[in-house]
Image (cartoon, rainbow, N blue to C red):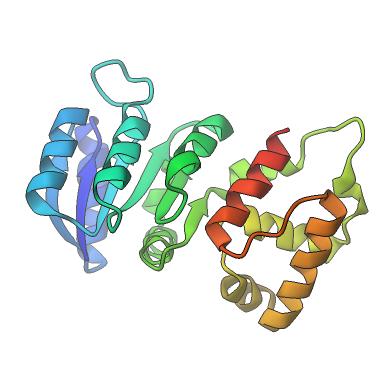
Length: 214
């Protein structure tokens, strides 16, 4: 699978490139700013882009802007955005227009090659990937009246996995249950939270994250 890596810190970029190369990925381009990234994507037509959320010139949200533009121009290109910080608002912005084939991970995760490989493969399969730390922070927020308290422990576990972007099959595999059991849990979760059940996993992710942020 062909990858473009965009990161303005050279040592970090080289580390990611080395990990991906050792894991069998083909690095077809590298960039250290927004314009360079977009140029590389147009030239090389990769399968994936991995981009730091804060890049030159302003070091604010260039990576997010790039991700949205790349997904709009190249629907088949998966985009994994990296951040040093837990920023759920940025994660929601990433999902607003093109929620499928995107991911948002804390930068520290990419040096776990198994986790990085899993995230890219899920994105390739059309899933959404959200860092578990972001999900945990949203689920753990204190609320004056908290419908989450009505969920069973298993339903809470399923809710977190939905928010992380896992498909029904992925959830079933992780929990060692059938997909039908997962579907039953999801129906109960959405009923208890007053949410409309979405048929597509990436739409469910957006709905659940929006609910957890509210």
